[in-house]
Amino acid sequence: MNNREWSEKILKKFDSSFKHRWEIYDDVLKDSLNPETIWIDCGCGNNGAVKTFGKLAKTAIGIDIIGNGNKSNFIKADIRNLPFPADYADLITLRFVAEHFENADEYISELNRVIKSGGKIIILTTNLLSPFIFLPRMFLPFSVKNKIISKVFNVKPDDIFPTYHKINTPHRFKTQSNELKLSQIIFISDLNYTRRWVFIILMIWHKLTEIKMLRKFRTNILAILEKK
Image 1 (tube, one colour):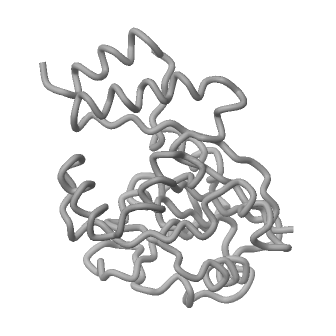
Image 2 (cartoon, rainbow, N blue to C red; image 1 turned 120 degrees about the vertical axis):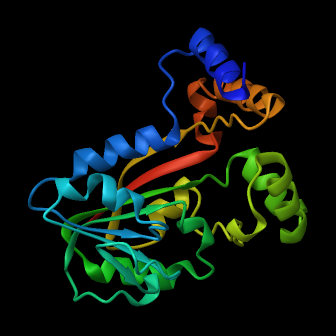
């Protein structure tokens, strides 16, 4: 039995209704798309989301600062300087991008410029209130965190980027912009199958944070901002 099968067996026993962060994100994304939607996926990576869900929208475009020119519906661009007119998009999404904003005001200002009034910005990111995010940020330099993440989670060092967590709390999402209102926030547990001991630690934390007053300490945040 491999690690994934072993972990899913435990998960089925203790929380058969559990949804992973990407499942919750995909559900929210699909509910936000319709044949009239103009959607921009910022920090799209390999443009997988647009490829999977783009047919649900009128227009779907992936944006990333790293070149991905072989993919359709892709533009190489910096989020701080999006190649679109003001009030262009109905929906903007950012999946594990916001934690890398060194100067959050620059990014949020540009997203606010491009999104239409009444439009939505969906952000899935890490939660700085979680001890699994907060403690490494406080006490470990990036080079050390890089080595730990690479070793524990089998991630290539080149795929690990500096994180700043400038807007990664519920309070910051509420107060970051006067024009963007936080309409919904979901706290999400992250369960990882790479190593069994990691899965057990995260599973215990997930069960503990089922207590309502502790839910805000889960590892991930999904925030939905709406432009007034």
